Image 1 (cartoon, helix red, strand yellow):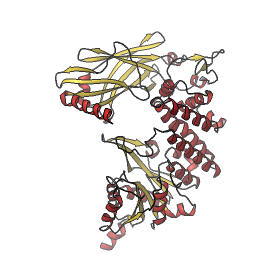
Image 2 (tube, one colour):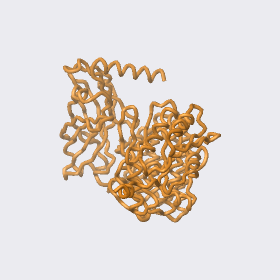
Image 3 (tube, one colour):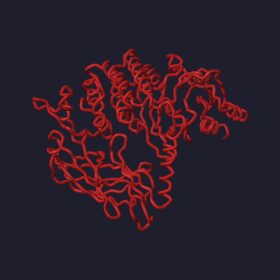
Length: 538
């Protein structure tokens, strides 16, 4: 009986490499989450990258009572994540290896799920779902959920180019001998975005891959931390330089291995993910940053060939990239920021060339928008303006949907579902539906905003989401461009029978979309004041 039970238990086959630098507040939580995975974990290799905050002492104290924990103290700080991960990989003695950052955690059952998938499919790599948990709110956003929606076995990465969309190394388990046989390592030293290069090297080696829908990694995003992580600290142009270099190396690695489909997919990811993310933030940067960013981006995009631009030429990232290539100097940043939003918004002006072809603007006619004429309505970058006007105990939302080269009129917009969605609790929402009426240059609609109802569901930020419905039953989810001007609703205190008062502040997000900050009651008002003072002081 006991022998049968022992036979059913997972064999200790996995090494979890935990890396950290000056992260005494979190590193032991990360290590404990790895040890708590159970008997499948043979060893946890904690690599301290020459911390000065006592992290190594905490780890060694933990190792004294945990024989599976091995602590390695580096004598010199490497400046990045690649070198300590390589150090841990070299020290691992288990058949399989995983990687964990000191400020993240493995959820219960992660190792068993990945190990079972890898061994069951005879796969060199197994990957699962990661969530970005934003702290302190606790909001969780799945990472590349589409890729991990179902159990799947991919015999060769070229059969699923979408694998390139997830360059993370931490939500995956690797056969150790596979990495060593192919010489797959992380870039050494201070090399931000080392995951992008490492993952390209893995895919270039043509592994068999198992995918599972199980949650296997919790990525903590701490925007309020005194020292932002490398991936979050995008304020300096050096960060963008490092990111483009990592993407360049990933492309060259895949192309050099004969993985043309994956190399093409890597370039597509750069346009749709990296470029759009940084374009949305350009409005936050100073003129010197913008000029340097623009120059770096034009140089990188100049390496792309015709096939890179030909695939889905109306996609927002490709349109934004073509504008950058066409102009030697930064231009149209607010409009580009709206185009880079998710979902994209192409705001006016809507210019045409002399022959009637839709173009970006009168002074950039070489950037053709002709592919928009055949793009499905459900994928068009529709532009909706939104304004809020005060009313007794609430506000009135006014919407204006713009025409887009005749495409919207042919589709026939009929109604719009208005949804205010809580940013930290996606299940909390207030909805209303209203019909469109024809207006000059487009269509208009209005809806009341019940601010006390929003306050009753929770303090915090509410994002405006719109579902535009068309005559044939098609629909398109969009956000709305926030208009500002005289007479519009500003920060206001609205009377509430339940809360006494509700403090409301409309604002535009980085990409120009309308959102609301809502704080009910006296406590809510005080919390807003404290947060405002904190931002001013820091």
